[in-house]
Image 1 (cartoon, rainbow, N blue to C red):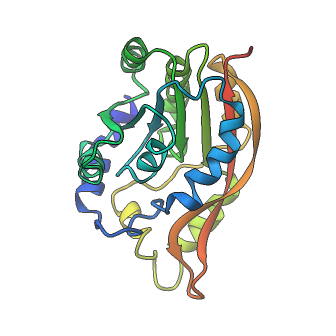
Image 2 (cartoon, rainbow, N blue to C red):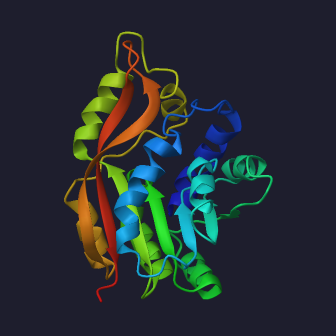
Length: 241
């Protein structure tokens, strides 16, 4: 069963119930602390910035709208219709387009590529939310979408992030406000071995063009007011030249 069958209803429930206030969702940090930092790493490797850019796993579109101010054609894609409804409502000018997509399903990735041609892909923290059996299929879908000329930027919590999340979830007061709904809806992030991501990329026919580590900022704060950040790994990937 694909990620659709296992998680779609959980994601729908999460997004239907999530507060609409900025910063209420655990991973919905402002773009200056997330996508902007990622673009500084991604843009030097783009062979064609004019290609469509897919924000894969766009959620409520916070990062999508930021990207749409910097690229000519941006599509926010997500599994959850409720998330996409929020993204559209927050983008009345239609700076970006939005579409329901399960990139694990081969036919859907192929149809998107047939429509748009080669595209660049931005994906933040989606792979670790997939069921283990779906992770290779998701990366295969990304490979289909990027085609020959596109590039993809993937950022995922590292193995070390698991300890941070477990400490938050089991603290004396229980999970903090932004993390509690994630756990309640059964969306607790799975742990992906650090070595697994480049293996998924290689198996999909992609080459790692650049990689590194970077703190992944969340919206949650510690008692002293500092942001909770998760250790993360980032990768720029595409077809070998």
